[in-house]
Length: 254
Image (cartoon, rainbow, N blue to C red; front, side):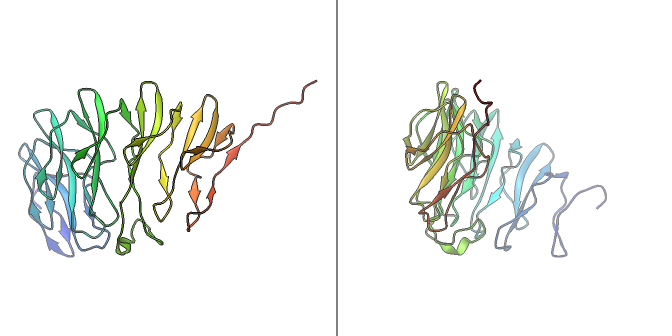
């Protein structure tokens, strides 16, 4: 309106700003709350249900999230070259950087996690508590367990979620899976871990030289020439595991 952008929700006009963060407009999974990033002058902030939050020099692109039940809001913000996570309006500790794909909430919204870098070392921060240091954390690999028999990303009514945390981390030139702050064995590469629906089991792909394998509850399975990307799954009751394994056909010896 008059060269000033604004957000309209259910026909109701919000306040005018100098700019609206592209791609930031988001609803909570239950549809009860809406949030977006905005710019006024040289300051950036997040607007939740029409109410602007604290102002910062920058807001991390793609970092704004709402918990599935709409009770919580989190995003990455920065001042004077330092970055931090703002949870429910409260600024967390400062770091040199915050990892992409974080922060995240557990399915019930009771827990929050993000990756952070300081002094060249990365950590996963869960509920404000810093985990062990690593040389890198796999982008998008941090996950909470679902702990529900029918847990799905939008099924926020299941409750009992997020008891466990897992992610992929690099130490030296090797990668490993970290489950509940406990590091697993070293591999040349590991994929993002997955939990069974009840949270009792965890699995991930691993690369050993030119071979690939699947590790389930710490035990490595048979090696293949490749593991199909995104094919690793648990059965609904968590008792079975399936994935695609590739075996290259080789010419017969003469």
